[in-house]
Length: 401
Image (cartoon, rainbow, N blue to C red; front, side, top):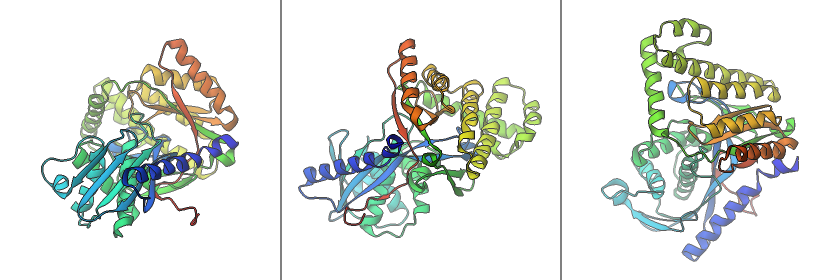
């Protein structure tokens, strides 16, 4: 199982070296340190977050790294490996008119959120490198926010416990960037533990680190980038959310999380519209699938979660109607090639599929998915085999490790 195990660390080392090299080339001296945050995949629990429900993400070995050093005054300079650009902004652009836009808004948003929370943010020079793919539903934006946040907290010696980082990073994305994300992405990229999944209650933000030791079980997760364009994702996401909120009102509950699985039939009988009933059925059954998955993982029965993953995908496809032909094809091909379970992960209408596989079957399953894509005339998918990794933090130097 050297393949999947090796996938966890070298990617981080490589991207960290690229960030440090980029910093040195951009600024003429080495950085003071390097800080990393991962992308995330949601093992199960889709569209449950804004319904006050449960989610179960884990951190990926794919990481965004910020190499950084302090600079005088209230000024920030950022170089991006992806764009090759260097941008600079001062306090007036953070708090006043002429706000930073584009990818730099995620960096400026973190500075803004820290200042709004009353922290004295150090001026800094940063260089950003990343292996988290953009637009694949793996939380590349949250990874960028958390890596920058980790760097600024350390450089400034700020009194900000890590359990408060997710809400601050979410505020940066919601209020400064203007993207209406929930708390799951930021929680996952900050709070995940190596070899664990993060059981998050989205109502009270309590967490439990649930063992998810794929390596010990001889398993791995194959993440397939469907390469499907996000078709009407924003409008459809908003429509699903509105439908769920309306249904909760009709049922007289605060959120659909309050409809128990054993009360689902009665709740559905009170709803007149078939589409609304389908939306409610997905959320209620998906919450229960998260709880069932957590129960299996707590008892070390990792292989048995596969059918729950597959049932989740069927629910997203049939009841919530958020899949597209590319992701359905990937799931079907992975299962036919021997995956123990497979599902779309993320908000839908594109993005990634994850498949639970025996470690030695990862390559054959990926090959089968690629062949199925070719047969349908789809753009070839990307894929990576992963094990759950740690959340955001400083990367130790060679002397420290």
